[in-house]
Length: 272
Image (cartoon, rainbow, N blue to C red; front, side, top):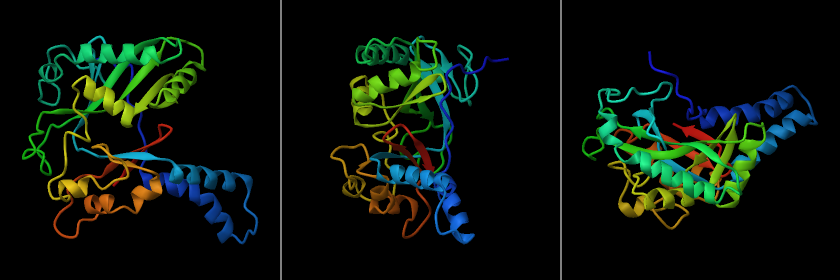
Protein backbone atom coordinates (compact mmCIF):
# COMPACT_ATOMS: atom_id res chain seq x y z
CA UNK A 1 0.00 0.00 0.00
CA UNK A 2 1.29 3.47 -0.89
CA UNK A 3 2.42 5.77 1.91
CA UNK A 4 0.41 8.85 2.80
CA UNK A 5 1.31 12.17 1.19
CA UNK A 6 3.50 13.90 3.84
CA UNK A 7 2.90 17.45 2.56
CA UNK A 8 -0.65 17.75 1.25
CA UNK A 9 -2.13 20.68 -0.61
CA UNK A 10 -4.81 22.12 1.71
CA UNK A 11 -8.49 21.70 0.93
CA UNK A 12 -10.59 24.85 0.54
CA UNK A 13 -14.26 25.72 0.21
CA UNK A 14 -16.61 27.24 -2.32
CA UNK A 15 -16.62 31.02 -2.46
CA UNK A 16 -20.40 31.13 -1.89
CA UNK A 17 -20.24 28.85 1.15
CA UNK A 18 -17.49 30.88 2.82
CA UNK A 19 -19.40 34.09 2.16
CA UNK A 20 -22.64 32.65 3.52
CA UNK A 21 -20.93 31.46 6.70
CA UNK A 22 -19.66 34.98 7.37
CA UNK A 23 -22.99 36.63 6.54
CA UNK A 24 -25.16 34.11 8.35
CA UNK A 25 -24.71 35.33 11.96
CA UNK A 26 -25.70 38.91 11.07
CA UNK A 27 -28.63 37.78 8.90
CA UNK A 28 -29.95 35.49 11.64
CA UNK A 29 -29.75 38.24 14.26
CA UNK A 30 -31.44 40.83 12.03
CA UNK A 31 -34.19 38.40 11.06
CA UNK A 32 -34.68 37.68 14.76
CA UNK A 33 -35.43 41.34 15.40
CA UNK A 34 -32.10 42.35 16.92
CA UNK A 35 -31.17 46.00 16.44
CA UNK A 36 -27.55 45.67 17.59
CA UNK A 37 -25.31 42.95 16.19
CA UNK A 38 -23.28 40.79 18.53
CA UNK A 39 -19.50 40.91 18.52
CA UNK A 40 -19.41 37.53 16.73
CA UNK A 41 -21.61 38.83 13.90
CA UNK A 42 -19.54 42.01 13.57
CA UNK A 43 -16.28 40.05 13.43
CA UNK A 44 -17.71 37.79 10.73
CA UNK A 45 -18.73 40.81 8.65
CA UNK A 46 -15.30 42.36 9.19
CA UNK A 47 -13.64 39.22 7.82
CA UNK A 48 -15.94 39.27 4.79
CA UNK A 49 -14.94 42.90 4.24
CA UNK A 50 -11.27 41.91 4.35
CA UNK A 51 -11.85 39.22 1.71
CA UNK A 52 -13.80 41.56 -0.55
CA UNK A 53 -11.19 44.32 -0.35
CA UNK A 54 -8.08 42.15 -0.75
CA UNK A 55 -6.26 41.96 -4.11
CA UNK A 56 -6.52 38.53 -5.70
CA UNK A 57 -5.45 36.30 -8.55
CA UNK A 58 -7.88 34.12 -10.50
CA UNK A 59 -7.06 31.04 -12.55
CA UNK A 60 -9.20 28.53 -14.40
CA UNK A 61 -10.14 25.53 -12.24
CA UNK A 62 -8.96 22.67 -14.40
CA UNK A 63 -10.75 19.33 -14.16
CA UNK A 64 -7.81 16.99 -13.66
CA UNK A 65 -6.04 15.49 -10.69
CA UNK A 66 -3.80 17.03 -8.05
CA UNK A 67 -0.12 15.97 -8.40
CA UNK A 68 2.95 17.27 -6.58
CA UNK A 69 6.72 16.80 -6.81
CA UNK A 70 9.23 17.83 -4.15
CA UNK A 71 12.88 18.87 -4.12
CA UNK A 72 14.03 15.26 -3.64
CA UNK A 73 11.93 13.73 -6.40
CA UNK A 74 9.01 12.48 -4.30
CA UNK A 75 5.84 12.43 -6.43
CA UNK A 76 2.44 12.51 -4.75
CA UNK A 77 -1.24 12.53 -5.56
CA UNK A 78 -3.71 14.35 -3.36
CA UNK A 79 -3.51 11.78 -0.57
CA UNK A 80 -0.91 9.15 -1.42
CA UNK A 81 2.70 8.85 -2.58
CA UNK A 82 3.14 7.71 -6.18
CA UNK A 83 5.32 4.61 -6.30
CA UNK A 84 8.52 5.08 -8.37
CA UNK A 85 8.09 4.08 -11.99
CA UNK A 86 4.37 3.41 -11.70
CA UNK A 87 1.72 5.23 -13.73
CA UNK A 88 -0.72 7.51 -11.92
CA UNK A 89 -4.25 7.79 -13.29
CA UNK A 90 -2.93 5.94 -16.38
CA UNK A 91 -0.32 8.67 -16.97
CA UNK A 92 3.45 8.19 -16.82
CA UNK A 93 3.97 10.99 -14.31
CA UNK A 94 7.66 10.19 -13.98
CA UNK A 95 8.23 11.14 -17.61
CA UNK A 96 5.91 14.16 -17.40
CA UNK A 97 7.75 15.47 -14.32
CA UNK A 98 11.28 14.56 -15.37
CA UNK A 99 13.68 17.31 -14.27
CA UNK A 100 11.22 18.98 -11.90
CA UNK A 101 13.04 17.66 -8.83
CA UNK A 102 15.97 19.95 -9.66
CA UNK A 103 13.64 22.87 -10.37
CA UNK A 104 11.93 22.41 -6.99
CA UNK A 105 15.34 22.25 -5.27
CA UNK A 106 16.43 25.48 -6.99
CA UNK A 107 13.22 27.23 -5.94
CA UNK A 108 13.66 25.98 -2.37
CA UNK A 109 17.09 27.62 -2.28
CA UNK A 110 15.67 30.89 -3.61
CA UNK A 111 12.93 30.89 -0.98
CA UNK A 112 15.50 30.21 1.75
CA UNK A 113 17.54 33.17 0.52
CA UNK A 114 14.68 35.50 1.48
CA UNK A 115 13.43 33.56 4.52
CA UNK A 116 15.27 35.61 7.13
CA UNK A 117 17.28 32.59 8.23
CA UNK A 118 14.29 30.23 8.49
CA UNK A 119 15.37 26.89 7.01
CA UNK A 120 13.03 24.98 4.70
CA UNK A 121 13.30 21.19 4.89
CA UNK A 122 10.90 20.30 2.07
CA UNK A 123 9.28 22.11 -0.83
CA UNK A 124 6.52 20.53 -2.90
CA UNK A 125 5.41 22.01 -6.22
CA UNK A 126 1.74 21.30 -6.92
CA UNK A 127 -0.14 21.32 -10.18
CA UNK A 128 -3.05 19.91 -12.11
CA UNK A 129 -2.41 16.81 -14.22
CA UNK A 130 -4.94 16.71 -17.06
CA UNK A 131 -6.01 13.07 -17.28
CA UNK A 132 -9.11 13.49 -19.44
CA UNK A 133 -10.21 15.37 -22.54
CA UNK A 134 -13.10 17.34 -21.08
CA UNK A 135 -13.98 20.83 -22.32
CA UNK A 136 -11.36 21.74 -24.94
CA UNK A 137 -8.36 20.19 -23.18
CA UNK A 138 -7.53 17.84 -26.06
CA UNK A 139 -7.76 20.64 -28.63
CA UNK A 140 -5.54 22.80 -26.41
CA UNK A 141 -2.91 20.06 -26.22
CA UNK A 142 -3.29 19.64 -22.46
CA UNK A 143 -4.08 15.93 -22.27
CA UNK A 144 -1.46 14.32 -19.98
CA UNK A 145 0.10 17.74 -19.28
CA UNK A 146 0.93 19.06 -15.79
CA UNK A 147 0.39 22.76 -14.96
CA UNK A 148 1.64 24.24 -11.69
CA UNK A 149 -0.66 26.23 -9.40
CA UNK A 150 1.41 26.71 -6.22
CA UNK A 151 3.73 25.23 -3.63
CA UNK A 152 3.74 23.95 -0.07
CA UNK A 153 6.80 23.97 2.17
CA UNK A 154 7.70 22.66 5.59
CA UNK A 155 9.91 24.80 7.86
CA UNK A 156 12.73 23.20 9.79
CA UNK A 157 11.59 24.72 13.07
CA UNK A 158 9.50 22.30 15.12
CA UNK A 159 7.84 24.94 17.30
CA UNK A 160 4.27 26.06 16.63
CA UNK A 161 5.34 29.52 15.47
CA UNK A 162 7.76 28.31 12.77
CA UNK A 163 5.18 28.35 9.92
CA UNK A 164 4.03 31.85 10.91
CA UNK A 165 7.61 33.16 11.05
CA UNK A 166 8.45 31.71 7.63
CA UNK A 167 5.20 33.02 6.13
CA UNK A 168 5.86 36.52 7.43
CA UNK A 169 9.36 36.55 5.91
CA UNK A 170 8.10 35.32 2.53
CA UNK A 171 5.23 37.82 2.49
CA UNK A 172 7.81 40.52 3.15
CA UNK A 173 9.67 39.27 0.06
CA UNK A 174 6.52 39.62 -2.05
CA UNK A 175 5.08 36.10 -2.03
CA UNK A 176 1.50 35.16 -1.18
CA UNK A 177 2.39 32.96 1.81
CA UNK A 178 0.05 31.64 4.48
CA UNK A 179 0.73 29.32 7.45
CA UNK A 180 -1.50 26.26 7.58
CA UNK A 181 -0.97 23.70 10.34
CA UNK A 182 2.74 22.78 10.31
CA UNK A 183 3.44 24.04 6.79
CA UNK A 184 3.34 27.12 4.58
CA UNK A 185 1.19 27.53 1.48
CA UNK A 186 2.52 29.63 -1.39
CA UNK A 187 -0.40 30.67 -3.60
CA UNK A 188 -0.15 32.21 -7.05
CA UNK A 189 0.83 35.83 -7.37
CA UNK A 190 3.13 37.83 -9.63
CA UNK A 191 6.36 36.96 -7.81
CA UNK A 192 5.66 33.23 -7.73
CA UNK A 193 4.70 33.40 -11.39
CA UNK A 194 8.01 35.05 -12.23
CA UNK A 195 9.95 32.42 -10.30
CA UNK A 196 8.08 29.59 -12.01
CA UNK A 197 8.72 31.16 -15.42
CA UNK A 198 12.41 31.56 -14.57
CA UNK A 199 12.55 27.81 -13.96
CA UNK A 200 10.61 26.91 -17.10
CA UNK A 201 7.62 25.59 -15.17
CA UNK A 202 4.25 25.88 -16.97
CA UNK A 203 1.37 27.28 -14.93
CA UNK A 204 -2.40 27.03 -14.93
CA UNK A 205 -2.72 30.66 -16.02
CA UNK A 206 -0.27 30.83 -18.92
CA UNK A 207 -0.67 27.22 -20.07
CA UNK A 208 -4.38 27.42 -20.89
CA UNK A 209 -7.01 29.85 -22.14
CA UNK A 210 -10.47 28.30 -22.54
CA UNK A 211 -11.67 28.13 -26.11
CA UNK A 212 -14.63 30.46 -26.53
CA UNK A 213 -13.94 32.59 -23.46
CA UNK A 214 -13.21 35.62 -25.59
CA UNK A 215 -10.30 36.91 -27.62
CA UNK A 216 -6.76 37.31 -26.33
CA UNK A 217 -7.65 40.96 -25.70
CA UNK A 218 -10.72 39.90 -23.70
CA UNK A 219 -8.62 37.45 -21.68
CA UNK A 220 -6.20 40.27 -20.82
CA UNK A 221 -9.00 42.50 -19.43
CA UNK A 222 -8.07 42.19 -15.79
CA UNK A 223 -6.50 44.77 -13.50
CA UNK A 224 -2.93 43.58 -13.98
CA UNK A 225 -0.51 44.17 -16.82
CA UNK A 226 0.69 40.65 -17.70
CA UNK A 227 -0.68 37.18 -18.34
CA UNK A 228 -1.53 36.57 -14.68
CA UNK A 229 -5.22 37.45 -14.11
CA UNK A 230 -4.83 39.91 -11.20
CA UNK A 231 -7.58 42.06 -9.70
CA UNK A 232 -7.35 44.99 -7.31
CA UNK A 233 -9.94 43.31 -5.07
CA UNK A 234 -12.29 40.36 -4.93
CA UNK A 235 -15.09 42.86 -5.56
CA UNK A 236 -13.42 43.83 -8.83
CA UNK A 237 -13.17 40.19 -9.91
CA UNK A 238 -16.79 39.36 -9.01
CA UNK A 239 -18.24 42.19 -11.15
CA UNK A 240 -15.72 41.86 -14.00
CA UNK A 241 -16.57 41.01 -17.61
CA UNK A 242 -13.55 38.73 -17.45
CA UNK A 243 -15.26 36.46 -14.90
CA UNK A 244 -18.68 36.78 -16.56
CA UNK A 245 -17.40 35.57 -19.93
CA UNK A 246 -15.98 32.46 -18.31
CA UNK A 247 -18.69 31.60 -15.80
CA UNK A 248 -21.83 32.93 -17.52
CA UNK A 249 -21.29 32.59 -21.28
CA UNK A 250 -23.90 34.30 -23.46
CA UNK A 251 -24.43 31.16 -25.47
CA UNK A 252 -23.25 27.58 -25.58
CA UNK A 253 -21.75 25.50 -22.82
CA UNK A 254 -19.46 26.56 -20.03
CA UNK A 255 -15.80 26.62 -20.97
CA UNK A 256 -14.43 25.54 -17.61
CA UNK A 257 -15.36 23.99 -14.29
CA UNK A 258 -14.92 27.34 -12.56
CA UNK A 259 -12.20 29.52 -11.05
CA UNK A 260 -9.70 29.21 -8.24
CA UNK A 261 -9.23 32.53 -6.47
CA UNK A 262 -6.07 33.22 -4.46
CA UNK A 263 -6.66 36.18 -2.17
CA UNK A 264 -3.74 38.23 -0.84
CA UNK A 265 -2.91 36.60 2.47
CA UNK A 266 -3.03 33.09 1.03
CA UNK A 267 -6.77 32.42 1.33
CA UNK A 268 -8.06 30.16 -1.47
CA UNK A 269 -11.62 29.96 -2.81
CA UNK A 270 -13.33 27.82 -5.44
CA UNK A 271 -15.83 29.77 -7.54
CA UNK A 272 -18.10 27.60 -9.65
